[in-house]
Image 1 (cartoon, rainbow, N blue to C red):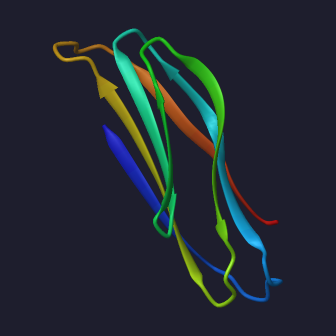
Image 2 (cartoon, helix red, strand yellow; image 1 turned 90 degrees about the horizontal axis):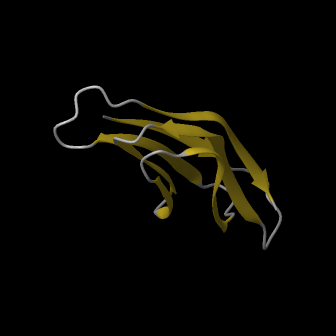
Length: 104
């Protein structure tokens, strides 16, 4: 199963030489028959994190890129849970609880 969530963030009035940082934070819990992958992408810059079966973990996934005033930043968060072939009762939770942005 997979889900994707797009968001557009316009940027105005940033200082020269600034960077923009997006962070997705949350938790993952997958049983012995499930794996999970989180992909955070912003305007072509990507950060991918995968978890193996039987994992329980908190995460903060970061994408950083140069800040350019007047630019629309297209943020996409994709969540994917994969069940082991032949299993019908595997379970997993991949939750993004917050998405934060900062100019650094």
